Amino acid sequence: MTFTGEAMADLIGRIEEVSSRGEKARLFVDLTDYAGWDLDVAKEKFQHMSTLWNGIGRVACVVDNLWMANWIGLVDAVTPMHIRAFTSDQADDARDLLLTGD
Image (cartoon, rainbow, N blue to C red):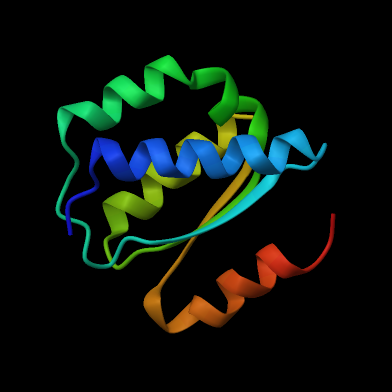
């Protein structure tokens, strides 16, 4: 699956909707079939960096590649959101991270 600029714009709209209620979005991202992204995704990200930076509280990523898990750990260290990688057999744990706690 390739992530498109249109999908990114939709996601940003949903994050803005959550933010308008004074809340932070929690995202479940399944990257097990990830095949890349198109250039419009980067454009959407740069245009809405503040929304992404401030509007997301937690992200649970399901991955089956060690390199993705390592990158996710680096992103977690430098952003205000809590982002964590899970293997596909830990998908229930990923959902639990989003549904529990503050």
